[in-house]
Image (tube, rainbow, N blue to C red; front, side, top):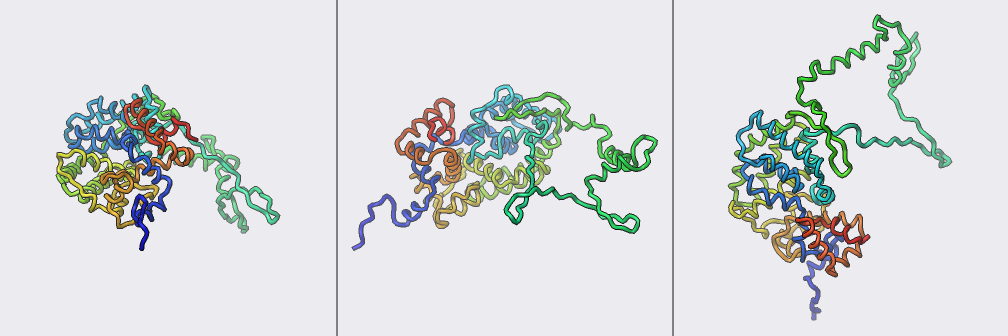
Length: 431
């Protein structure tokens, strides 16, 4: 007679449970207070989405700015007012609104939000600082990180390290019937020491080089609005990096606004969609269309798979929670393969689950409810950051003992929004 299974799960679920990583085990252990672990950028997006869901520019910008305080500073400039078609004046207003965000972050830096939202699992390739620099609202000053020069060494037959000089390109020339090799690195220096001087006092090679460099410089630099013309500097980020504000530089802003205007009709079709998988495919195509027509700088940013899928996930969650748009989803029909295709999973945490599982199966297994699979990979990424910094056994013991939940509720009450796991665990000193 077959022995009775007295475990929590059936045999097939026990097989999956046996291969769960620590990130998934701690996610399952904290399923009772998962509502206190939602990233604050998602909470802020859900709060502001109903006011601007008709405007594609605002829908995307809310997802990119992220920090709740920065979003409030951006909304205080009437940026969420009903907009019209693109005009040069609107580009200037858009530039001024983001300039206000930079000045606000300089005067009242949201340090706690930066610390929370710079960890894994919360779209760290986005945020107000990334948005400001990408749209050329404020540009960094100087080389912040200098490349560390290391000597290249090679091991001899005796095993000793021997310095090897870096390679330089050589140019073979023929002088008096003999072939000689000269390094290109010293060609310009030798031109200063040899050759007759011209009337201007410089060697011919040097004079030609100066003329070529002079032709590359703009003839009228004051006519270019994208120069660093204001001179006003701000210090942003946790490292207090120095930025200089630009004056009316809309060379990156205008293509983005025009691209969103060109995709406005497609966005209306997305809002009218009622089938979830088609909605996700349409929104993903829409983000790629906006990226393609937004100029090279913004296109490179939005085409990053992590950034694009993070925007799509925020839009999907907001559209599902609105309720009045008619969008419905049956999580039994959405598979784990669909989740990996539609939403960010840079750590490939979803690979350990059977590909035949539905999203409802995954959600019930991890959270004891059928509707949280859309955030499953997010929680796994958040706990991965904890694993790299703190003791796994102590964190698991705190989760099972209840002290981690009490700390999460306390942080939520203190900050006014949920805290990420790394911040919560740091407050408990569980190293």
